[in-house]
Length: 336
Ligand code: AFP
Image 1 (cartoon, protein in one colour):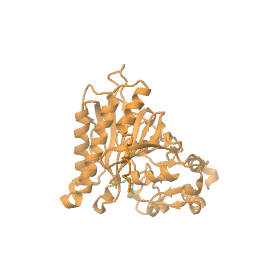
Image 2 (image 1 turned 60 degrees about the vertical axis):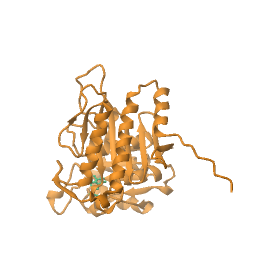
Image 3 (image 1 turned 180 degrees about the vertical axis):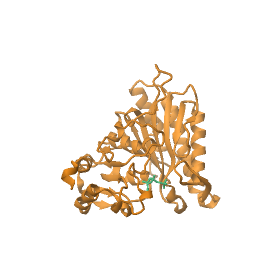
Image 4 (image 1 turned 90 degrees about the vertical axis):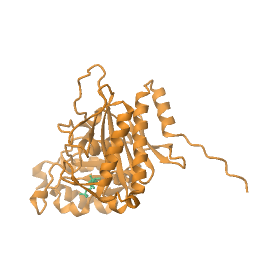
């Protein structure tokens, strides 16, 4: 039987090199991306061997959000900081796992906002988690300008769904691309992603256990629309949103305003703006979708006041975001 010809694929670094050349940009961004990709591969290795190496338990410490930190969260944080430092291209980083802004290289060029291991509740089950990041660039003419960047100022955002070997990357005004890991542990075969226009494949994704804690207008929207679409929820934003990009539809994490235990209300939502909501919103916009918060305000327009600021999130296919925005911005008098 004839030997199957060797399949050669375009690698992510080859793709980025062409992108930089095409736009007459520098090598600095390539070095940063190489660091982020190396971090993701290293994290995936530790995740895959987590059970055998005994790394899937709690670390015994609690993060700024009052959540128990998993041992894997610490490992992913340590790995990411190592690679960002070795790149020499990052001024400071903001991470879900660090209370404070992390100073890295004073003469760096970029700010990096990341969640090293999103979906901690899936870790002990070996289920999909995410490594998510957003990148913004410093204003080279205004060295002192370290202000927190809104999503519209990001130049790139990406998410690795671990341990599936998939990487989704969005580049400012250059689209959203998906890559798959090959036998040489290279991310290859850049595939342009756009949200499917045909509602037949669309899905809704939200924590249905919370639905009675949402506002009346959100509950009404769900009742009026949920029978039209399939429903999927993994509990890790990167994994759930990975599906939304592929099948279309909407992922939402609304405000929790009617919780039987008022202490558990989250009028600002649960997700963090800079390294969760803005990351998926940037990826979604470059794939032809959009994203708003509970006020109907575009997520990418929100100027962060705090590195760990929370945000409500509705992200996905434009017609669904327009529909939920109409409901969210309806005059109070109409809702009653
Ligand atoms: P953890 O990292 O604490 O598991 O939270 C994951 C997350 O930030 C995001 O990935 C999920 O979409 C969302 O929270 C899940 O929250 P619920 O468990 O409240 O549905």
